[in-house]
Image 1 (tube, helix red, strand yellow):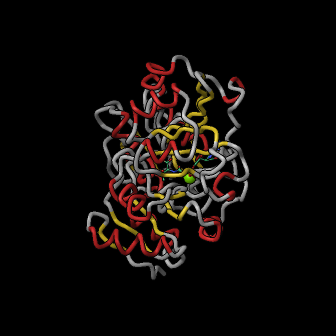
Image 2 (cartoon, protein in one colour; image 1 turned 90 degrees about the horizontal axis):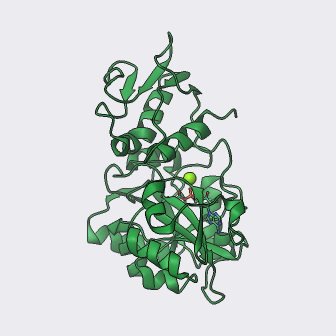
Length: 319
Ligand code: TXA
Ligand code: MG
């Protein structure tokens, strides 16, 4: 049973209260434009240790430091000219930049998992940035789900997984983007895609040129967080299914698929990939609560489809 209070993220008094909790090392779930994050003071190892514990997360998986502007990011990492151009183009927004950690950044080793790089993001999320500003410190925030479960895109999703084990949930309504940020490792003038996400590859390549794989960029660590079965519902998923079989829930996509109805959720009847991304995790959760098997229609691999297909592949991976 959830005993964690839920407060309105748009109320400044809620943010004052949340900042006070974070300041004393407590954990607060905070809405962002991508998914809900579970925030802890990134400079406080005790708070970050609690965060790993609440998520049941393997320690080797490093965290993203959330900031409230480019200036604060530059106090934490060295942004190359390319990293700066990317930050200026996409921040605030669903882009995470992995760059060399500044020696005096003050970030807990538990955030970087001992790496010499740090993942930094300025989210387009007034609650998260408002908390960073109030606390005057970066916030480490993985998605606010127990490790291995589907990422939360509503306050209720957070309460289902973490209610009772964290101090507060801030409710900002459903997340606008719905899949996590795109993660890029940037080494000098080269960038590698570590995780597809809320900003499409083509938009990034318009600024960075062709993206490399992690192995192609010398400074790029392979992302230890990319556990294969990361976004795992309990149900068995069958991908690229043109239609459901008897007993299967069905995630459809586009005008060719059936509309949302009994046992069917159409991610976007109009074939809009941004709308589909925003609905993906809710759809997985809803069908997972009612079906042991879920069939998923093909989703085109362009634009945000790359992130959608990445998450679906992980959700379908054998456990
Ligand atoms: O949209 C998002 O990015 C959300 C919201 C809350 O901001 N956060 C999120 O955090 O998805 P999380 O912890 O679920 O995923 C962070 C990913 C992990 O796969 C981790 O391995 C990778 O970032 N990562 C963090 N630091 C890294 C580093 N120094 N090098 C390589 N990968 C890193
Ligand atoms: Mg996650």
